[in-house]
Image (cartoon, rainbow, N blue to C red):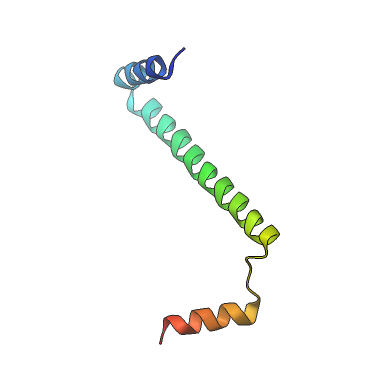
Length: 69
């Protein structure tokens, strides 16, 4: 099934569903999106660590202090 066909079918399901199903579907989709964002951030962080793009605690304190100057 193509992406376009999937979208059309999902639209039909949503259009013909009750509030409870729509709210459940929304909760599933938003949780999936949030998990995907978190996984991407973790992967980027791991790459930063491997590449040495890190700061020790003293450096972080100095960076934070510079925000209030």
